[in-house]
Image (cartoon, rainbow, N blue to C red; front, side):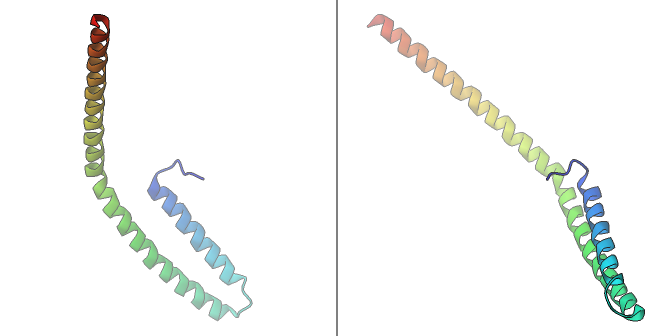
Length: 104
């Protein structure tokens, strides 16, 4: 399944779904309220730390995107030029071969 939205909003949706699932799971667990609330708080703290960590990773990747894009564009431009040169070389070789064939 692919996501057609921005990566950050997908990550936010995923994290909120994870938090909601964890909270509901603990609330319906067969424990007393005090222990359930403590588990919910502990899990939310853990999820917040993990979410902060993931957001920092996303920021690192986000900062690298402009450079990556220009590198890809440069490689594509060079590849296009090489293809044009190879096509021209093939055309020249074919024309030479045909000219030799007509003479011989």
